[in-house]
Length: 248
Ligand code: MN3
Image (cartoon, rainbow, N blue to C red):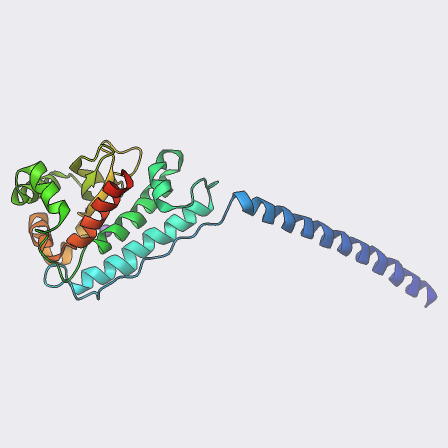
């Protein structure tokens, strides 16, 4: 009986000792994790709130398309973007800075981060209450650059039709303050430092088939010509003025 007690005491002391060591080492590890956290911050982005209901862009974009596009596509890009970011040694804290330096990131960040950022711009520059842009600075700038506002729409539409496969069409402003229309493939955008024409996006239009197929089927031209009824020109103008004011 005494032998058993001694054996138990020895066991207890070994166990106690090793468990103290484990505790110390786990505290140390936690400390290291926390310290690493200072430079390798966990960044998680969130889905921006829609400022209008899914059915409010009808008849130009139908409710079902909106719901699937926002809840499935946009959410999907966001989830994969956050997942991709958790696997890289992050260097930038804002989505804009990530886009501007996209060449140092893996393709998963480029595709899903682009998808997250582009759709955020797209929802914001659409509106059920689209008003005439005629009194806005961006209207004057567009009319000056393209001869007339109608000409701008024509050029925008024909470039959208020329895009092969999936992508986006943009109105942007470059570093010299020159506005331009461009197309990007997949989920690339003009902010990315790998884009042929780089600038700050003013107007983003999704021309992936999932943006219009349920309503317009394969007729991308119909979708683009109807989109002018739901553009939030105040938002486009604000993006333009933010750039102009940042240069003053
Ligand atoms: Mn889309």
